[in-house]
Length: 533
Image: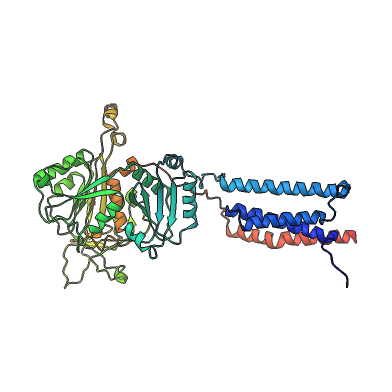
């Protein structure tokens, strides 16, 4: 039998290549793992031994061996190979330890906004983002990783609220997909990810800015006239108050006759379905609050008191006391009565800009009508509208069938909520006299008003339904002029570079790619073979 020796030249070559392979494997493993022992280190040591064995066989290590031309050539090749591998490993090590990215997209889709970069670099204390979603989108992971590249103080974690129950209770998590910030012992809810929604750089950055500056907006709920309570009871506003506090707002009741004035720190005042009239002095105080740039939210059910009607009329708003009904059956699947319209149509306004065709529900609602013809300095925009098949019924009788009466009922589409703001002189002035005074009034705070013909959508049990809570909280942010204190970060979108082809062009392209060009190649090959035959 022929004896096989590992010292034979051809086997030493195999050991040489095998050793080089182990060296590369050890280098890659150590670079990616960031730990060089035990596995990467053992691979490197084994590779060095095999390479040395493959070169010399341990029996030919002599000066005469190094004098051979083949030995010098092999040594040069080995040194060049090892140098190349070492340089490649060093480049990978530096790339992992000090990542640098080049965004070649036209709109810089994968680059954080300059405001975000400056904010992250200015963080003085640890900040952590808690995403209560165990299966996040890849884009969300990449966005948070980009944040961490700009600051060692930034960290994030994805949490399953059903497993980490204690953590979910600590942040008062109500829905899967909630994104909370934690900074300097303070917490804030910044976004709720629903239906494959992506994490927003704008909302995340502005949430960090608000939390870092410790700027809390204050909301007061008017009490003392039979308004909806703030307690955890049926028909109360406990869920709405909790949502405000989780979003960084302060919320408290306000009894004007008791305190005598509107607090100076009030940003927004909410009047939720009073069933008794307000005192004239209270209405005057609310008017003064609006005129000084405050925000007022009025939620009126069909049975609410009418003492606020004159104030609303001054702002171009009229309350129609007929009840909105839906006989189309669109809410029947959800066991909703005809008096509980299901809304999917929204206006063009920042409050509802991201709603799309989402659903909101308004139990026992009345229409809100815009009447701003005589007030040119007011801008009124509908927030939520019914479809044309709904109408406002004047005669509601449970024993009678509901049918539209054009003489007594109000045809749809109808507005359930309206946002009104007073425009600045820059937007309304047309005369030179007004333009001369722009510098004096430009800094005056401009009032805002939101009116809904329903208060039930914000009550316990309804607040958590679909977009009801978002509608309420977004209205609060707009009334508090939160956008005046936040960073304007516009979302970046990939440029649409798709080529739109007609049917004929698509067919032609398919024939060219699948038939004509391959056939041309075969024909050319056949001609070439024939000429060389």
